[in-house]
Length: 323
Ligand SMILES: Nc1ncnc2c1ncn2[C@@H]1O[C@H](COP(=O)(O)OP(=O)(O)OP(=O)(O)O)[C@@H](O)[C@H]1O
Ligand SMILES: [Mg+2]
Image (cartoon, rainbow, N blue to C red):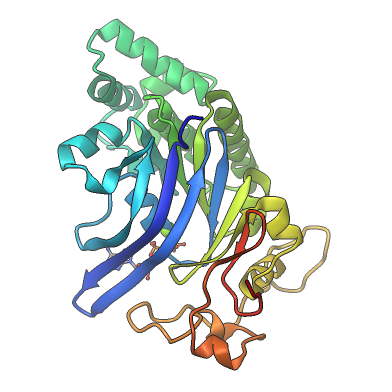
């Protein structure tokens, strides 16, 4: 049996700041199979992007990985030199962001940018071959007039087209793993649906292992095989999408589900979870969600609950469930 493209094991990441140590990610584990999609879901500040950046080896300078492994095709990238890492980044693993403009230099055309990436990562130097590959990448990302996009500057493209171009850049090197960090948050609803559709199609066609990051459980429901619910840097629940959505175990997951707007139900105002994330520099003892949990018991404020497998493949970190 071949190894999974991505395995994250017990990952813990802190940021060092003048105001203290931000415990952004604590003991997160999950894996993604070829052609599978795993969603990281949680409120703003829960550590989703930090995990994504760690997987592409692009954490900011003030971040430290305290523990864990990130196995990309069975190689722990946390043990690689920066030169070795450079080979994997953009080659085995690519990332797209919420703001597609962030992936482009405004002074270069999309074609120049794409050609540079393909030349640098795939070692192709022939001009014609480069252009052919670039046009092909744009076409694969569903851009109807790839020649025009090739010759355009980023500001000449609409948000939806630019996100498609960013997807083309990310996939031009045929990576095994794609990290999509809130790729549709800045787009309007119709475009959102189109980009999600495109990602699904590419995942199937290319057998990509997809890590999809979103704060919206509704979006996650549409694109994922598995859902990892994360709160204040820690795993609350992990399991197959149907299991987690139909039979949510963690009180936080249930709250998130209640917050998904339903078009069929007329609601006066959007629901939200009262309270806010704890200060990641001074975490409360016990379960991090306890201060906002309506079901919290004494033990929840004292001991951090371990992650336990309640049903095969369905994990939860909550004192209500016993091993
Ligand atoms: N470079 C940094 N230095 C210090 N703290 C940081 C840095 N980057 C992120 N953080 C903090 O780490 C925590 C996790 O941030 P992260 O961006 O991973 O969350 P997120 O889940 O992606 O949030 P969002 O949904 O808003 O994108 C937050 O408290 C954030 O303020
Ligand atoms: Mg983020």
